[in-house]
Image 1 (cartoon, rainbow, N blue to C red):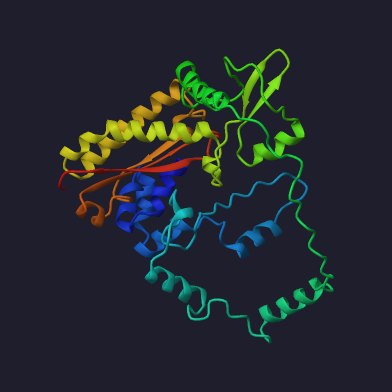
Image 2 (image 1 turned 90 degrees about the horizontal axis):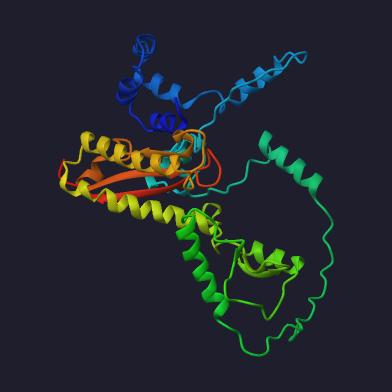
Length: 343
């Protein structure tokens, strides 16, 4: 079972689990012996969250031979969004927060209340605080800020280099595709720069997302960077941002037919097939989707786990998509929402 398929199971009701876990007679027979609560809990606990059990297993290791321990953990374990590809950006409702507080033994009125001083946790905190306490350091005077750091610009700046970078994007798109980073490319028609950067000066600028122009012997003026200003790891690189924009726009345009279809399981299956076929073609043509198999390159979710009754009532169909444009198994997630026909 692929990881995306297992993530779907985490969002299924017991009835949906019984339907999905019927691939073989043996598995179906085992599922029939479990009540709904046990089945629901078993899918969510594969050992990684039971620290006592993990510790007991480690204690039984025979150090004279190699040992492998499988302890799967679920992202967002115990939350309403556990296992969902987008749970890192999900928000809990007021009722969900109240339920979490009750399970955790925490009061919402005093969420940062300290442990009791005589409790084991309180004594452990006090001992640790005493061990880490240091004498306060003397405050140093704040140095005066210089009014001029010797880099005051003079003369006029040219827009030729900036316009040239736009041309590099267009040329890279035409020659390779939007998935190719428009960097290490020559600025044709630009002969020189007003200021030449050193490697030491370029490093901090590159980390800050500034795509600099560099001059190298026998290579001319090159665009030496393809980063964005985003602080989000997923959107750090320009080619990743543009690739996902291209895929999103293409899928949104290519699935407009859903507006005339009944919003139900049959249409969801057709939509999954349409999007999967498009992404598979992109993967086979090596157009920016990495992975040894399509399952490593992307996932598509469009079923009753992300098309809830309130979504259907709003006349929408939701398709969650993840692609791996940089490294296999690290997906960039985006959602396509279309206006759909009546159920």
